[in-house]
Length: 284
Ligand code: AMP
Ligand code: MG
Image 1 (cartoon, rainbow, N blue to C red):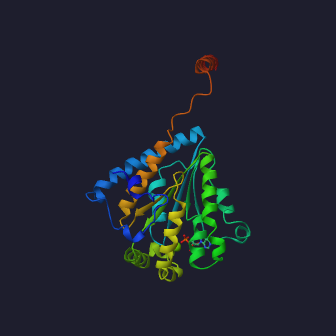
Image 2 (image 1 turned 120 degrees about the vertical axis):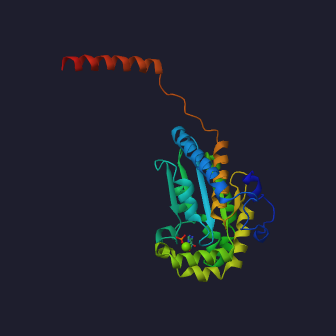
Image 3 (image 1 turned 45 degrees about the horizontal axis):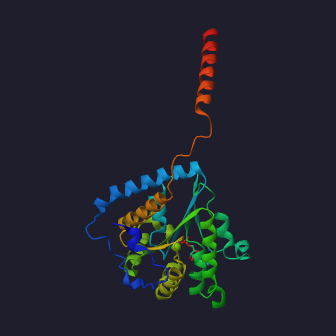
């Protein structure tokens, strides 16, 4: 199944999240059948990341957005742990610090975008500035409504500079969110994830849905597509997201970089050095 085709938000088309079932899992597939597939994609992602790093002429940015407990942290843990930490980083967007808030909304994001050869994951992103900011009226509509165009221009700039951009909205149902909140309450190892605002934000589900629909519709482009990932089933979320990342990286046509030296010449130097070393060892 081609999940890129299936879950992409078509540019210029109306998006209704209610029409996308967050509990779907691609029909015949099961968790057991999916695990080896996920493993295969994660391995390919790691192999291609090594090539990306070696070539250092392109980069990859993965943006994760979702309501609480939809699995942003899970995607990071499951799909990116195979990559070499040298060349990979994750940045979580919290409430802006004083100095961040003193700048334009893209400032903190721009500093964290991947350099050539790098993979960067944004766990939340500058999209918060048209989501939480809009839902809570943190700035007037006249300000946030202009940000979609600014975001599109920003992403165009990154794309033209050699960055592939993949944006995931992890789509869960309110029932599934509540179930995960319960697990966080029941499991001491997860208690730390609970925040007071989880429940007040949950009340704003319809407003968030509206804000997400608007944002995804206005900013899904050929060079920075949004994908709505059905995320009630964690294994299906991982399968769909890993396939989409692996196929996007495959499009980057990554190969081993050409050798920068004359190998025959270096081989001669090696043999001379080895002979000299042997002679020294023989004397010693
Ligand atoms: P978490 O992802 O659970 O660590 O929470 C991070 C919190 O920071 C979320 O409640 C976000 O909505 C909030 N946040 C991120 N970016 C912004 C922003 N630009 N303005 C206000 N709140 C933000
Ligand atoms: Mg949270």
